[in-house]
Length: 619
Image 1 (cartoon, rainbow, N blue to C red):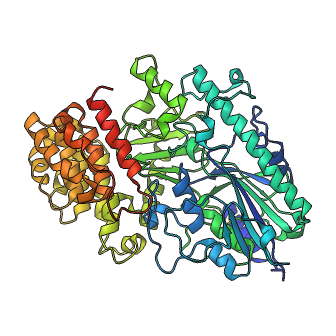
Image 2 (image 1 turned 90 degrees about the vertical axis):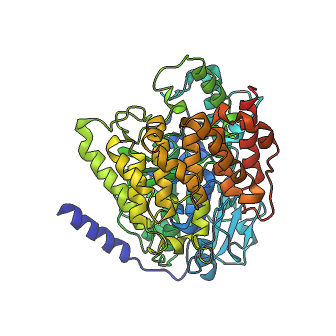
Image 3 (image 1 turned 135 degrees about the vertical axis):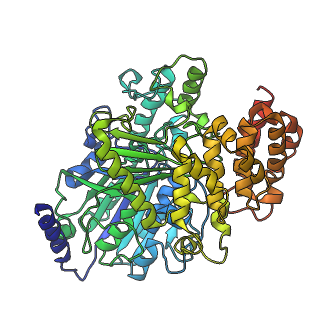
């Protein structure tokens, strides 16, 4: 009863604002690849006086998630106010059209008279329509607006990016000896240097943020401007970036509302204080619209946490992982502030799949070398091994998320409700991740993936979801369901049937050898790829040869397109030495083709092809 009364008061409080004739300016200061390693969040190792100053004038959000643990899908969440798995834009990097009724949030602001600038990174996985920004470039600045025009401005700093953390030479300012090494990382000089350099770069970013704040003061705008600061996802270190653990999703979020606009604050906003409300990047667009007096459109899936249209906070936050550069994966996560739940739909893939960009970081290299040499013990070994079907962590006792509680009797109720929250979210947003990437675009090429996904006739999510659950459970009891999936009329159900046997490795192939061999001739190419990988890895030598013959044409981007080529090359890579007979043919494979989709470039195909050839040659 008390909670119901409180929620009613919050709604009444938020609805009672009197919208002034003039409107606030809004400044977003953003940075890349850094979590809550700031002084204002209690990190004594950090040096961040300018961001701490924003916090002293405003509120820090303790439970802010980026929803995606990597930049492009995270930024896509922000610009749309919609979860990317709902629009088909969840993969890193990708390109999907928006449905015609959707807009990117600056379009709403510009229609309301705001001058909108972005300085300067975009990186959206949704195709950007015309008229989103007044200026999106390194020259973008509020100073270029018309006199008296309200502004919305973003200044994005890249100095904290993963690529800068690993740049050498670098003279450490923060003492590497004082670094706290997470439980999942090996304690080596390389790891300590990377973490110390990460903190050095955060200090540099803090200085850059301070320069923007000085400009705001110099222009006499500080009293009229609401200031946000946030990082675009967790730290740019391996197992933080790209992973929908709390370590990859939890970000700093600081909001400072000047006294003039205190009526736009919410009940949990306290000057110099903190809020434990669950906030996600999906909430940023509706919150921004709410602050300037625009009612967020119904299709937006977030909740405004400030302004005229603020809403009660959600009970759960959600995260996701799809393709990361050249490697496919599918993970979904749920958090409630204390517990983090992960559901792995491709548990047969190791956490640390080879991604060219990630392996340029010294920590990644030394970590893998130590694992290969047998010099690590759990939990430092986990990243290089296959995944369980599910994970559950208690952040209060295990902030590094290394003690999986899925099998804990004391946590059965927590596990059950997190599973249910995940399922509810999948159906609420119509999660498109259960379709292979290429098929998501071809099921109905005449409409956007979002529109296709919201049509049950075109996307029968209930039975596809059930097939994916049976496939990824890894339970023997679900094998009959997996085998039955091969007979379904829907290609995605058959795909999960083949995937379910692949995930069970040799036991799966032995249980469904007939079905897999028949599936090598399936009309749906993704079914053929999944069946070929299963037989190529765990079948007989004769079956492996047949599988390779199926995969090679699909790996030719000029014949099958980028999405299928990536999937087929990934399957060939996992055949290891069984692909040796095709070495010359693999070397001859093209990595470019006319009409390749935007942002899915030849670089990903080349990275995968080169890796396969190095392995086959023992390099």
